[in-house]
Image 1 (cartoon, rainbow, N blue to C red):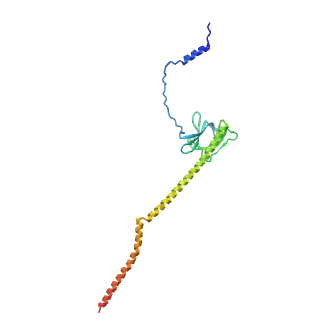
Image 2 (cartoon, rainbow, N blue to C red; image 1 turned 120 degrees about the horizontal axis):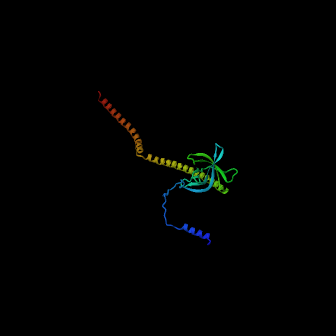
Length: 236
């Protein structure tokens, strides 16, 4: 009885499976490509790390898991503002979404070098809420990178706000000085206006009128004296 080679049978079976029959199967449903917007198109990513986020529940006085996913620092290309965004890895639901503003701080969680905590006005639920967050990373290095970036962004936002205040002050002073120069330019124009010239001429002419009035009165008196003298001469 001839022996059967197992390897030979496996090769023949593989060739039979890989053989192209030429048959074409049309898809049952045709899916169209759909463009998806994330709201991050106008922002640059400064940091992108995998982590697990917790939120402190004041009512229960305990930490509650918010979700596991990727935390990002996103800087807007125009305004320069930076926000922290974290989405759950599978559902892409937003766990945290808030701006990093001047004065915000982050600190290491007590007893865990892989975790850190901070306060923020968060908008993940569609309305601003004061939250206390705790985030945990897979390594101490990632946690340090997160904290360093957090503090760096907060400092940069502080400088940006100071520059904006300085620019606003300079603009206000410029408008004020421009208004003063404009009022000075108007003053000479008012002095040289035709109305002012006419008033000045009238003021100059008024003394002449006053001097002319006494002269007329003197003539009238002289005529009166002549008449009276003639009448006296002709009287008997």
